[in-house]
Length: 365
View 1 (cartoon, rainbow, N blue to C red):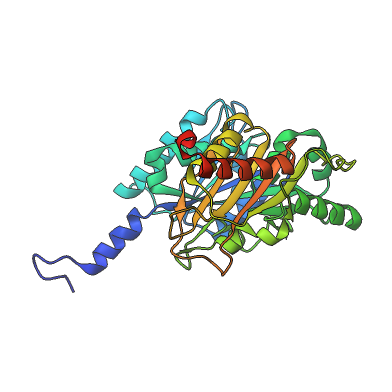
View 2: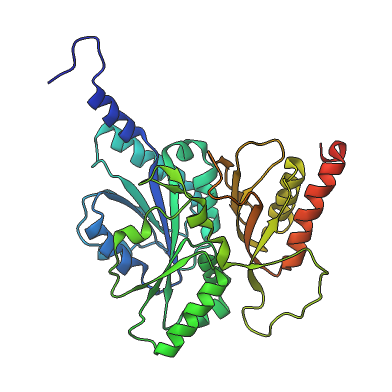
């Protein structure tokens, strides 16, 4: 039954809001041969209303021909790597998909999966998604999913910085080919991944098959609960604490992962906003190559609600304010994954900048 003349149809209005709501984007990354396309093939069957953006290295695209028949649209970003040579085409492609969806020219897809090449640095892709205002208003990053080869992953982490970054920025790690690798090697690799990225849950994937729910609602925003779930997202308890102690006091462990460290910093008193901004800006600007990822929930002086911060290298996400603290703990909590950067230095930087700015506001301004 249609709505009376002159009055809006609530059903149609709700449908319009759903159509205009920002669409979740999953970034699927992982080193060469780690099984991304196999996973994608399974997701196409289980999440049919998905737009796929595949990025293939080289002038001739082949991986898209391996995908099963799908209901959603697919765009092929060929002729280079989406993280570098054709990064400029990512935003126009997303815009074209959105406009075609709005006009009804293509199926009304509900989500987007971007598959990068195996040698891609995921950070420029995240930068593109977060800092293009038109794209950010219509798409939201739902999470980064990284496939890791159980057979060759250990060596790839030793030899390739891209493999380390792909693991460090992940919200979920998919461990593939475990049936081909010795059980003890798989166990050691799992331990290594948990050390490199404590917050990312590790899921074993056989022949690319996994529950599609495993790659959804991985970020701060949970579409199911319509809320910001900081505790689930940060997993603060999994990180070892770092204090603003004496630098260089402890020798680094003798292992190939000594350059990568994951740790937490907890500050008891409310933080000065300008000092905090200065400290984060310094890390993101001058130590971006060392700052692989950070997340934080902070208590800022004069703010009634907690503030959530996070970033990847030089890419800083927009601030988010929570309606309330997730628990009774009102301390500011940070988690970091860094390379060639002492945890004590980071802790001291946060402590000194926020304290100095509190006592010398004119300098902070």
